[in-house]
Image (cartoon, rainbow, N blue to C red; front, side, top):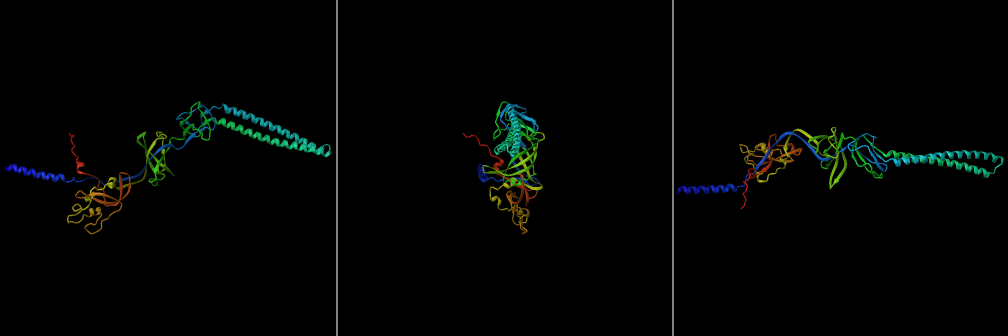
Length: 416
């Protein structure tokens, strides 16, 4: 009987103890990371498009039908090399017609000059006859008028010659333009015409070919946000990747920061040009480049994970009152922990408290204690510690994890 009573009492005690044990909220657990010493490179990221440094769109200055094509996609061309031929038949006929008109005008000029010489002789004879009284003054005036008219006729014939010569030159130029030539040394990027196609020259000349001058030298036109543009300077090194070679990193340099803003959906960006060497011709126009420009780099500095700056304790009570971890053997504050908490130490000297950001360290009770620091540059993963009560090797809190989350719960069975 006594054994049964003892067992009941024991079970009751265990039940009460278990009730109060499981009723208690789980103790908070924290993930920490060490303060390190190393290098940080601050950078600006942007996306852009690869383009040739000089791209020329070749059109036509005359209208006609494409008779021949001398180049195709990816053809290497030299400056002045024929790349297409417009049917020259009409232009050749225009040249012959203009040349005939020019010959006729020259003949008329020669005829006018003969007339001037004839009227000049007549005018001279009439002057002598007028002195002798053989002819009247009216005859003299008629001879004078004929001479002056002949002189005017010569000037008109000379003008006609100049006009026909201009028409001939224009016809010859049009004939020359019927052969389309490359304006630069380069490579044909695109061809927009075929043999037999009719092209028309107008105020908006159609693009027949697109020629990239030199694909061994390319550039990336990136759009940089207005908040980052002040950190960029000409000459800064840049690295980038393209989807075609995702495992390879290419290098470049900032060569131009354009002042003209580009506004897209109320977002202001500025075009920044990155110069790129493409000696192996791996990169092609139009590729999308993910660019990273290194704006600043510091070596051998104290750095803390960025997650530590984002951490905030979930329970305010955990950050108040430090009776064990922050006190020494004699009941006074430990100077280093008091300084990190930003309050006076036991010796009465004020602890240094830096402005800026706040990180948390764990005291002896495992509770987070705030530490104020001043920060510098960042690379996204780490932040420079300019000043503050942190030393290399210190553990800072980066995440709060409950006991249930850390241990993991038992999966619930199916509901019947």
